[in-house]
Image (cartoon, rainbow, N blue to C red):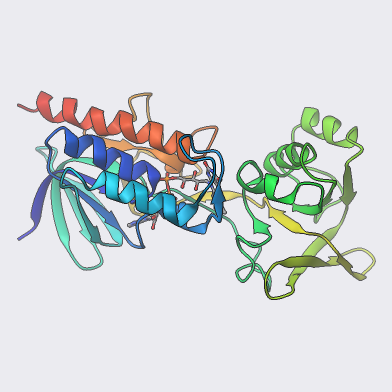
Length: 308
Ligand code: FAD
């Protein structure tokens, strides 16, 4: 028989763990489900320097601190790859994982997003050691060095411009001969003496010395020439995608798959909340995921009270 909870949180990243803390502290029975180790994307982060309370902390260490905090009021944590959600006529949510089935009064979706990968050799190996998908997070580690930004959309140009405040020089490597970014962002980037553009070019390999990135191999699609750019870091902005495959049938996602909520983190389905990076929102960071988590962790209490 399916085990029943007041609240199930899918995803034990910073958002999910905060929601579990608030909901369990309000005396609700809470289960966090994750298909990986607790911590979410914090496990992919070497150092976090922008989470208040810690001048600098390793991502996995912050994950452990949050886990201990989030389980102190008896929130449970279990492995589970969530595959499907159904909602019954009386608004009970049925959660199917690859190995179990659960029922819950309220559901909090905290499954995050993932950066689209380039899919070139060296990318996986040097992720977090020179390969980054987050300039706000990692830019400071490349102070006074040269870096490559891959992409030509808003994120690539915005983040590339941000990086010039920290690094010596930014080469924007773009596969086309013009950018997709908004004109105002393009104008700013073209006027920025620290940004150079490498047009019609793709990155074919990320090179390193076994410890860290040392350069990227590029291929010019027009001339056919290959060239190594010797740099200290590569920031990849070829898009992000939400982890919302199991929730598409609920009618709570926009056309790109992001979950839409109001400011109480409520989705269009009563009793289903969404928090953190999986939401349609501007800034995807640990602090914002934690903020969302506290709102939803409190919100489920009010929702469950309203059922009485
Ligand atoms: P996530 O942390 O993404 O957690 C989502 C969890 O959901 C994961 O554990 C995943 O396994 C689980 N999950 C997904 N789908 C399912 C499913 N179907 N079933 C079960 N479980 C599922 N932010 C900062 O503030 N500072 C930084 O310095 C910083 N550095 C970063 C460096 C890197 C390399 C990256 C990639 C990100 C960085 N970020 C940083 C961003 C930050 O990590 C995220 O904004 C934050 O982790 C989002 O939290 P979340 O709880 O929404 O989701």
